[in-house]
Length: 302
Image (cartoon, rainbow, N blue to C red):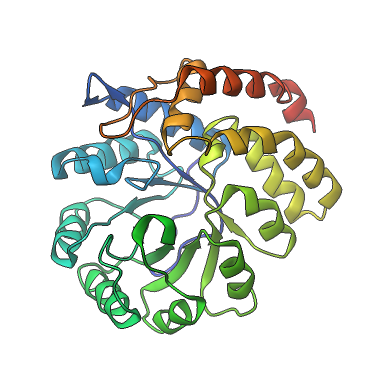
């Protein structure tokens, strides 16, 4: 049964999975993308994000971005909302991305600051308002300083939240997460997998974990534990997940995630250059870590 459609202006709480972009011989593998999207929706995730960092969005052509997004939307058929990442150096190019993708029934856009330029707070604000002006759909800010070279501070996020379409932030800095949680001006989603449990136990309600590609059922269960006050069960489960989470970021994202999916037979380990596939040594460690996770039957019975 399809879930109730998220109204415009709102990005629902919960687990939004930042999907990989399956590739085969440097071409989109849309069949694999649709199988993954359907499986994640069936596992109980609350939403999917395409074209983000984990989705290699910056390495895809405009045509590829549109085809992948359309394919994922077709696969889930309204069962879960789908958001698209839009990013780049030039504001006009990001606005072009939004105008193309806005023909599709997306739930919103994940928007980082312009890359590389290290723009000021006023420059970030101008960029975000310009992007918002291309659509009626909501925006989730994406604060990831290690990749963009600039920071959306909590104070700037709160200021931007005065815009009716800027409704949430994916925060990858643990200190920023704690600060943002102190006020109720903007939705806060944890973008740092290692900080996810602390965020949830402190009352956070949104997470965007790349590691959830592997055994999404366990990550869904983690949220269920924290939502129902089963904190010790959540801590125990997170201890089991932590070795895998650490390995998912041992080499540049998304190579380890794709390696795990390849080991599971769900897609290839291929990434688009200049990214490089995960090393054989890391793949062996990932395989061993996955073998230690609770079996599916145990996870369902927990």
